[in-house]
Length: 180
Image 1 (cartoon, rainbow, N blue to C red):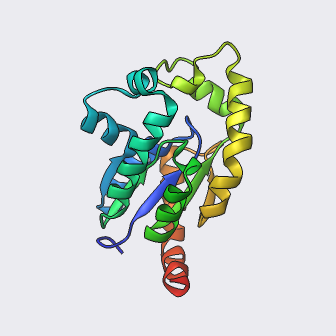
Image 2 (cartoon, rainbow, N blue to C red; image 1 turned 45 degrees about the vertical axis):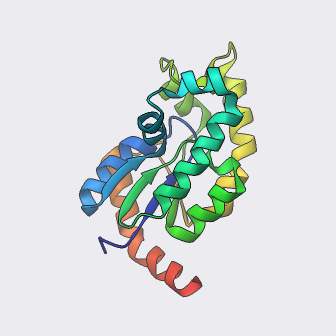
């Protein structure tokens, strides 16, 4: 299966896209790429700084370019930024160019996982719960629109999540080929 397959992980911040993505790529002997890290590498600036200087619109433009470039590669596991699905071109490219796995978790779990992380510009607020709820309400339908599979990371370890994804890849790849 390795080589030409692309696996794209989508979902909200704190769901485990990067952590699971790294382990999944290693298990499948594929390259791992994180779109946010790629943006930081290309710009020489961190995400909060880009948000501060260019605003969310400037960041989303950069994200769209990176998603377009990365989804053209073969044989990668890509962890996208949580908001990548806001752009319809990103959604189309992700859906057309690989297997899309929507990782999801409940609000409590996301709050716990992001509580001390100061690198998330959208959570710079006094009411992180409300902000996360608003983000999920807006993005969940977009995640679902392009997801080939939905996996909850609430009650599973990283190795369990990786095994779950691996167990579904063959049938997901076949389904993609038939629908192409």
